[in-house]
Length: 260
Image (tube, rainbow, N blue to C red; front, side):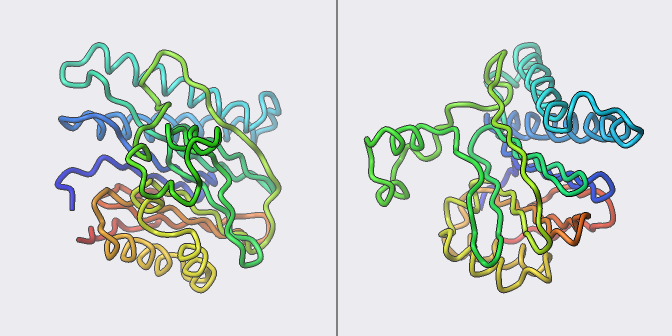
């Protein structure tokens, strides 16, 4: 329903990278921030992964991915201070980096990473939001959180401050795992039980899975930009597919048609 898309998504199947960013800030500034984040992270990850594949083992993939996100934060923060019309811009970020049998998961803000394993969907990230803080401290019941006006108030975003605390973890992937990265345009409008049902039912066809998730979010209101990236693990190597409104996709994927 929005005229301007401030989400950006990138995938690179050759390097095992999936990224989703949701921009914050008016006058196109959010779009600038999310594009900067995606471009910087993907470009720098490719370079570091090449060195890692060539034999470099320090730092680890989780460590260098976190360092790159910190660098992206500094660049966005500097641009927000120096460029006219970009004051106050920022972006959420969710990154999945697959190397061998492991995946590094990193995020800032309220874009999420889920994993479907053995038919069960699990949220692997915690939103940087006022609402999450309130639920965690018992100020609001979890069952009442979906109707809260505080759900869109993020407590942390790339570019919002000179320093950022990146949430980072690493885990072993299993054959058949499906990882879902999404902006809050999906998670705000589609219940996790419905996400689980769709991903589990359609996981052998990732483009169809993405279409169904986005269509359901649109059917439920579609008031925000909706971006989805899906990764299915086949043995040690992931197969990656991605869909985003007006996004520029990498690799062999073709740009998708925006859905109203």
